[in-house]
Amino acid sequence: FKNQTTSVTMFAQRLATPFARALVARSALARVESVLAARALHTTVARKDIDSAAKYIGAGAATVGVAGSGAGIGNVFGALVIGYARNPSLKQQLFSYAILGFALSEAMGLFCLTMGFMILFAL
Image 1 (cartoon, one colour):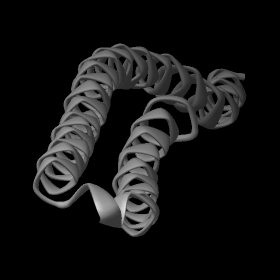
Image 2 (cartoon, rainbow, N blue to C red):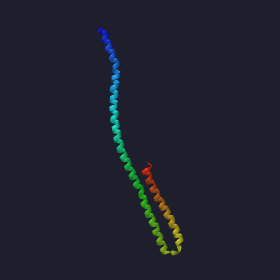
Image 3 (cartoon, rainbow, N blue to C red):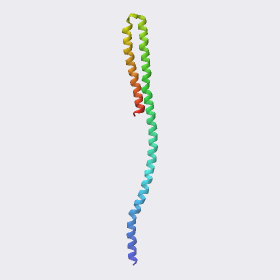
Image 4 (cartoon, rainbow, N blue to C red):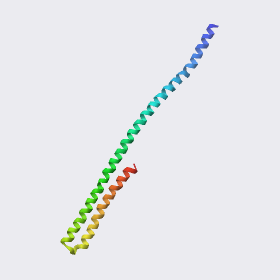
């Protein structure tokens, strides 16, 4: 009878061992997953801060072109006034060239402004 009890005990241990291993593995896996989730959360927050900082820096750098456009437009109309003062009979021709220069300068400024908004809101 003792032999039979020993074999039943050994059989029960063999059945219980994979189940116990599975429980231990599951709890260890849960701990590892929680640590990884915590690390991923912190990494994501830092990465998001860096991404938003890069976004603002890029948008600010893109809007510098708007200031250049303003300087270009001022230069165009300043040259128009000087040219008109030197030769008033060329008023119409000088004005058409000034409008062309204004349009080109303004287009560059609008492109820079559009890029700034695209960097901020589209990316």
